[in-house]
Figure 1: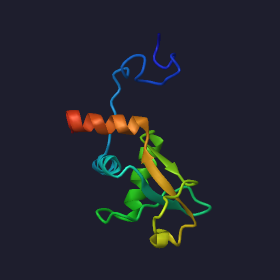
Figure 2: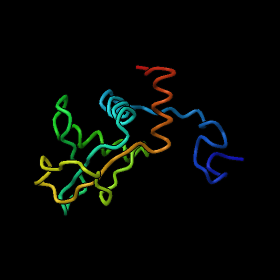
Figure 3: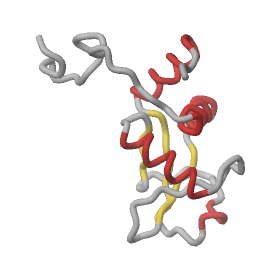
Figure 4: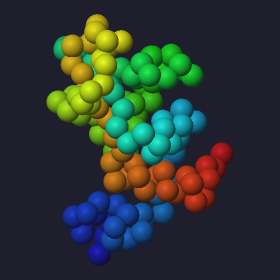
Length: 122
C-alpha cells in the first residue's frame, strides 16, 4: 500500500515515508506552550485571516501571527474562531472582533511528544 492510500494520511500506514517535520525555534516553543496550556486565545480581524496572539512578550505580535499561520498550515494546531475561551478576558483583543481559541491537533501532540523524546535537530 502506498503512502496515503490508507486514507489516514502519511504516518499511519507507512511510518511517515521518511519525511521529517521542520520547525523553527518559535514554532517549537509555541507547540511546547500549547502542551503546557491546552487552549490559548487567538483572534483576527473580521475581514482578515491572520491570527493574532497577544499573551506572550518574547516575540512581536507579527512574529506570533507568522508562527501560528505556519503551525496551522502544517496541521499541528487548530485555530477555532467560533470557540472562544470561557471566562477569559479578551480585553487585550478588543481591536479584533473575531475571538476564539487554539489548541494542538493530534499531529501537534505527536510532534510535541517527539520533541520531548528525541529533542530537536539542527
